[in-house]
Length: 168
Image 1: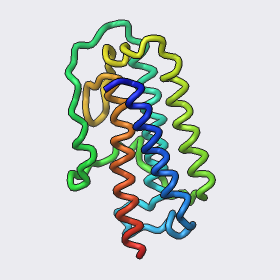
Image 2: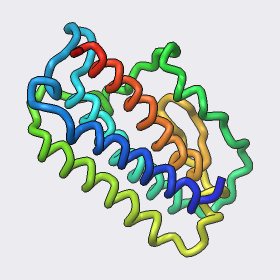
Image 3: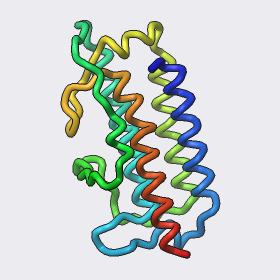
């Protein structure tokens, strides 16, 4: 999958997320189904933290001068919500109550940082030749890091929709 195509998916997915968020009130944002589940606000915090961590990983991976010869990972499993994944502690949200405006601002900032790094890459094929170790998925090509971001976000959009359906 080419970077341009991935960028399109990133944009579409983020637009979908923001569209959902714009329709929510403060209670919907911060209510939790139970003590072991995340609120919509916390899911968004997790998405922001994840994107910021991915930017750091991509930056580090780009510093490498060695070509990687690792296979692309199938990442579609990220969309399967029946497959429970535990977020690494570093990407877990806090209990901080955030207003919708603040969440959207932070989502925009993390995406801006991603695009800043991607737009500095002269030869996008370098993303398919460099890798960096992911805490959960191990060795991943940088292009897979970028691609997994929108799949990860789509997974959490499904989760947010499930939470909203529970409000009705």
